[in-house]
Length: 426
Ligand SMILES: Cc1ncc(COP(=O)(O)O)c(C=O)c1O
Image (cartoon, rainbow, N blue to C red; front, side, top):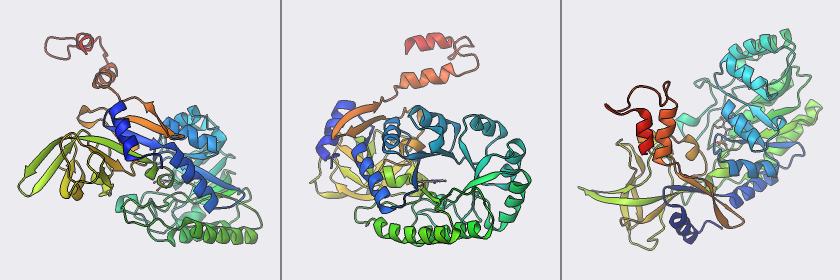
């Protein structure tokens, strides 16, 4: 395993903290494991790049033959810039405006539409085109309420009860439905969920006539263990059941369809960590508060949906276990990476590793409190290198000022100073 504690220390020494580290060798292994677990000749792995859009991660997955699940024009352009041919991308955005649809359609990407309203507008504008339809699988699962996407309480997908209405639009405008799609949720906890969602989508395909159907796409959601003692699901076993189900379906359907999945977390979560330095230890009555040089805008999962991230004290791994609240440097009470957590004794200047931070961490980041996002380092063939530089506060401020309507020519920024004078100083 390349990402040893010694390696993390060296990376922190060389690149400072906070820094994200992604082990590309691990992502490569996960990709191969996924492919092996689902041995289908027409398998397509659409990496959900919303999980982690680091360009080195994207380029690696591109070289391995992955496809892309894109959810915004930004995703699309970055994937294309990292070498993905447009034919290897599916576009599954939510609540698009007309202008976005038009912009994206110019690229030739395959659109995946999940609402009747958008389907109708799309059909009027682009009759006769190839399209994928996203259905809500009517199965509720996911490791937190906020990331369950199936079921009629969420905004996602055309409801199964609306299949006929969707097909009416499809026929009226001669749309060619080449794919049917669903995504049940992220971190699917119940082993049967994927199978149940598959069955629901397969019955849509079986009951209705889709003469142009080429593939079924069953989304992502493959759970990974975050807790130290949490076992990983047996995906090889699950894969056998899924392939058997899909194969039987294709036999009945009379066509060997493509089988598509959209893993995000599965490929990248465990390959990443966020390295942070402890700068303050504070005893507040019974609590020991450990303050770090990062914060929730840089890793929001614990605050956003109570997610667990294992935290190691790299500087003092054998220290006596003590209970800490691990906090960030942001002016919010909820700015915590962990609460009441047992960790080897922490001292100021210790290096902590917030683990399994390769998915939905940097990608969900922002610059609240105007603290720039961390650097990103990748490990490839066991060697670390800088992937993306840490943004400086100066560059961040410059980008804010430069994007103003009167950028640099406008009124004083401070009482007696122009914007360019301010910029000249920083
Ligand atoms: C449509 C779709 N596909 C795939 C994914 C990836 O999910 P995960 O990272 O849990 O595999 C998501 C994430 O929510 C999604 O919305």
